[in-house]
Length: 71
Ligand SMILES: [Zn+2]
Image 1 (cartoon, rainbow, N blue to C red):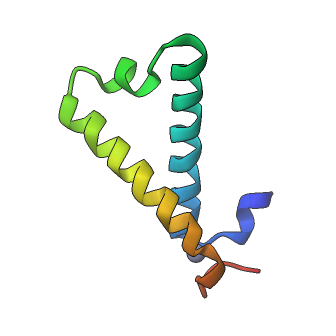
Image 2 (image 1 turned 180 degrees about the vertical axis):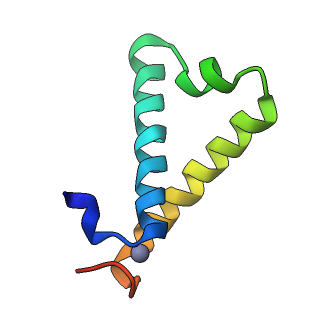
């Protein structure tokens, strides 16, 4: 598994980045927002997910310098 080289923090970040990528792909392709469809009833939650995805994207950039991730 490719994700085995990541530490716990970056594994979580990787999952969130994928969720974000798939979500935006669906918005572009089908004009359908998965996160909104699931969590749209709670706008604060949708916002938190977007923020977490954004933070994860930045966190993944730090993988190269992470001492806990296997190289
Ligand atoms: Zn790491």
